[in-house]
Structures are given as structure tokens and as C-alpha cells.
Amino acid sequence: MIDVLLVDDSATSLILLKSILESDPTIRVTATARDGLEAIECVHRKRPDLIVMDINMPRLDGYEATQRILQIYPIPIVICSGAWKSPEAVQSFKAIDVGAVTAISKPEGPGSPDYAATVAYFIRTIKAMSAVRVVRRVRQLPIGGVCAEKANFAQLMQRYRQQIDCVVMGASTGGPPVLKEILGGLSPSLSFPIVIVQHITIGFLEGMVAWLQPSVRLPILIPQHRQAMQPGCIYFGPDQHHIGIQQGTIVLDTLRPPEHGLRPTVANLFFSAAEQYGKRAVGVLLTGMGADGANELHKMRLQGALTVAQDQESSLIYGMPGEAVKLGAAQLVLSPGEIITLLNGL
Image 1 (cartoon, rainbow, N blue to C red):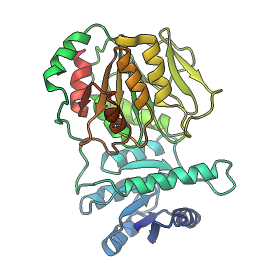
Image 2 (cartoon, rainbow, N blue to C red):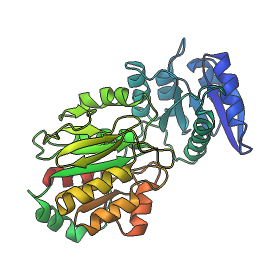
Image 3 (spheres, rainbow, N blue to C red):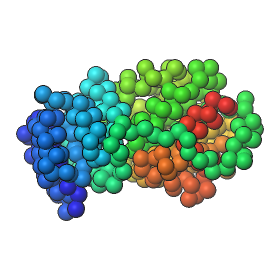
Image 4 (spheres, rainbow, N blue to C red):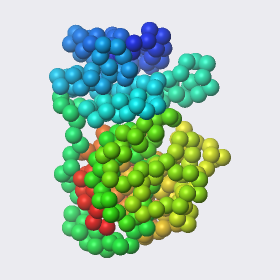
């Protein structure tokens, strides 16, 4: 049984979230709180397995409460907010900076056309996050790690130097802080574009970009259809659009339906990179639930591309990169720090 503390200043939201969570027989809401100070008191008394935390609350907001709780208790905290416009979204990502495991959108009521799918995703996320190991300090992703092919690492960097036309990345749960570390470590003189799919709640992307950009020396863009890619620019697949690459331009597609509830998919991006660039591409699959992009990373490898999976030690959820490793899709299994070294060395 997963014991959950719900923290939200809206009585209506507390009732809705409690009903949603307890619709799953393995989840029990053991306490509720109306602000961050009440949440801290409840944590002292109840010691929940997981906390679902709103971000905007009186007296003490979700960011400050997360920071204080994680100084004492190693409890997974999921930020759950209905406000995804900047600067509210930036505050949610700041909570991830200080140790929250992920941030998701607050489900809408039963009248919403996507209610069933939203509830299923919400419950799946809560269950997955309850198993995440948290430490009593600001969570730092390791940058040491172990390179799976240490002997070949330098050789591969030399082999692919000056031959890269595009880097594609895919991430899901746990992706934002890893992307912040990797993108923040990249040289401003990078000679190729980077295209990224991050599985994210609709409306979340602009806030994430606003949170990332001050830490990144390269421009971060949410592209338009048929926008030409420029070296040294980072492009994120926009909400509700499949994203691919064709003849040096970004191709967006809203006609094809979501795949396994996802749009954009890492699979579509990686497939197009394999087709368009072959050995002149690099594919990087990062932390996340599921297997999106694993098969397509394997296709990239078969086409001669350099393929990388994040290592298990630094992954919040070792779903997507783990599947890639099982398939033999990744030539290298690297920590975020090693991925930075690789990309800067190409």
C-alpha cells in the first residue's frame, strides 16, 4: 500500500485528487494539508510514502515546502499544479531543482473529454514515483558514472568528430533536470543542432524552456513547421505535434494520432533521424517510463549513427534507456557528465 499526503489550498482539488488516487486499491491518502506549513507538520506525524504537492499556496508555497521537507525526510515529492504559464511553471521546475521527483498537471474533473486517460497517467506516475529512491538533500545527478565501452569511448569520439549533422534526444519522467545538466554543460560553439522530445504535460513546455534557458549558453527554441535547423540551436518538440527532420528542416505533424497516448514521440524523431542522416547523426535516450524510442535508437545504430543511453545510476526511471540497452541499441551507456564530454568532443 502506498500512503500519500495531499497538499493543496483548494478543498475541491483535495476531494478530486483523493477520489482519483483511492480509485486504485494500492494507494491510500493518509492525510491532507492546505499549505506548506501544514504539509511539514503532517510529514512529521504521518511519514507518508509520497507527497503530492501544489505549487501556489498561502503561508508556504510548494517550492519552499519541498526544500524544507527534503532537508529532513527522503520522501518522493510530486509537484501537481494547475498553473503552467510562466512564472508559475518556472516555480514548479525550481521545486525539481531542490529535489521534487517530477511535476505533473492537476487532472481536470470527470466532465473533461480526456478524463480517463488523464487519471490513468496520473495514477501510473504516482505509483512509479513512490518507488524512486530519494536522499535527504538537494538531489544531484551523478556526473561520474561508468562508460560501458571505456576502451572505445575516445575512439568513437575521434571517429565521429566533424561528421555530425544532428543530435536527437528523447526523455520522459526525470528528464528536465538531466536535460538542464547536459544542455547547461554544452559549448556555445557547438557545430550541430539538437532536437529533443521531452514527454511533458500539455502547457508545460514553455515554462520548462523559460527555466532551462538561463542555465544554457545555446538558444532554445520551440520550432514552427518547416523551420530550418541552425547549428548550435536546441529545438524542443511542441505540444500535440509529432516532430521529425527532413532535409535540414523541422517537420511537425498534427494529423497523425498520438502513439500510446504520446505526441510527440521519441520514436518518430529518432526514426526520421535514422532515415535522413544515417551515420551523421547521434541519438541519446534519457531517463523515462516506458520504451518510447528504444527500437528507433536501434534503427539509428543499424544505420551507422552513434547511439547513447543514459546509465541506470543517474536515471530517475530506467525504462526507456534500459529497454534500449536490452535491445543492444546503445553503443555507449553514459552518465550525464559523460554525455556532455561526448557532445562537446564531437
